[in-house]
Image: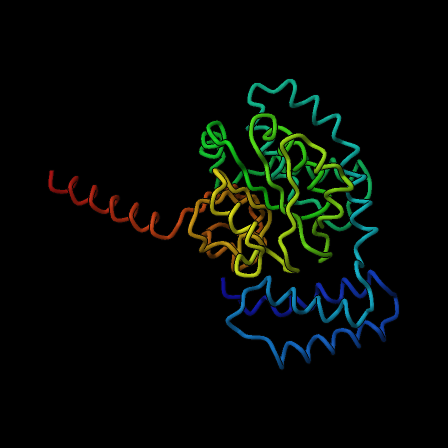
Amino acid sequence: MQAAPDCIPYALSQVLATARMVTEDEWIHRKVLLRTLADLAEETDLDKSEPEIIFASLATAYKALGVKDPYENEKARCNKAVGALLEEFRQALAESKDRLGTILRLVLAGTVVGIGIHDRDTAEAALSQAQAEPLARDDSENLCRVLNRAESVLYLLNNSGEVMLDQLLITELAQSRKVVVVPRHQPILTDVTVEEACKMGLDKIENVEILDPGAPMLGLWLEKTSNELREHFAKADVVIAKGEANYQSLYQAEREIYFFMHANSPATARHLEVPQGSPVIFRHRPPDEVSAAAKESARKKRASKKK
């Protein structure tokens, strides 16, 4: 998805936030911003997507700051805050009459978890508010149907914090099917890395495999990933993808994908035709399938008019 003009100031805001994670020195903040601006002006292809531009900007910032993972402590605090609620969530799931549907809604709510969630109370408030918010697009019933007959799932992770809730769904799915979980190849913002997913013990869950995408990136760009991941992507019965970066990199994919996210980006909101910031569980269908469905709908309308 081609980036909107809003992407440039947003990328710079991410760079500044990253610099502030590392140091309070405003001179360094300015230096990192100016270096990023120079790279943006010289190298950025305006046809690139938002995740590609943000990733390139952050790569410049990380190099200038001389850090591997400026969000390491932030991610740990966020995981601890959400993790403190897991037993409560497990109890609610045990009492739910729609266990899978409840987990899906909880996993979507988890996409609001981010920087600043440092304690149980803050995490609980954010998740409660998110769970009460109506969905702008909701394909969860269809997802439940396909999961009930699926034998394999490819699960694309997003942020720390929310990954604590992802593990509830991953554990549930892995009871009766193979689940391949894909974190990030290396640290980028608050996204979950392969190393972090393994430290959480996701690789110890029966029927779960952690798969490195094979290259550093924000989102999932299939042309940059390993052959093994591309094979899993093509053959999995169900693909679940968390977050906007995954959506913006896969929105033209030639297969069905279920996206869990808040449409915070203006470009994403416009593309999905939903209010900016709204939560969605969205079933992406291959372009050819969408075109065929539209033609069939038009045919039925014409036939109805003739009657």
